[in-house]
Length: 58
Image (cartoon, rainbow, N blue to C red; front, side, top):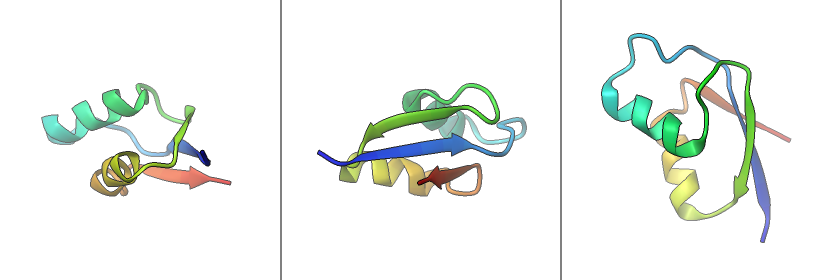
């Protein structure tokens, strides 16, 4: 399965609790951290929810 690398580029301070929980579920707890996940529709949906806080690293 294809992998996708996600980097948290902006702070979670001031974000709603559901977005903070989405970042936690992705494994992103600090700014500038990179995590790798399988490229599934579930992960893509989570990225879409917090797209203003993260970027996809190729």
